[in-house]
Image (cartoon, rainbow, N blue to C red; front, top):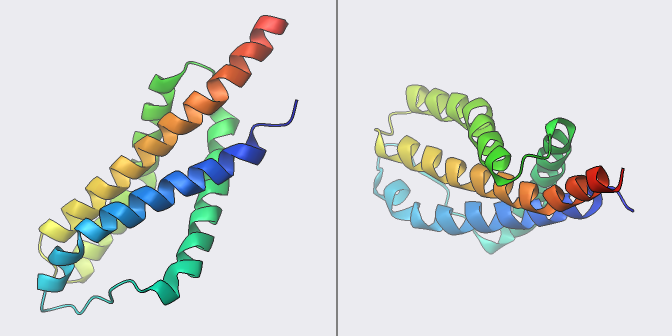
Length: 140
């Protein structure tokens, strides 16, 4: 059987691109209304870079998830998503809100989008890998 990382990282990249891209579109009005800091709106010219970043995120997220996965199912995927948010998103969003005069709404929306994205990726990863790990344990 192939290692689950090979298919997992592509699925996680797709899930993260859908969540970050889709939920990021909902945030456009908040960023456009902020007249103090001019935000660059996403364009189709940036799509290849966005997809490359999603692939890199998918590979890293999947690899780290598989290193610590104990086979306890979806609950562990949710827990992993919360921890990734705490480690990766919270420091960035707090630093951004301290350095730029953007108020509280934009950092709160960024945190919510990252939380939704990382928890969804953790759930998908646990659902995909859970069967593989359980099947290995049952066969032994």
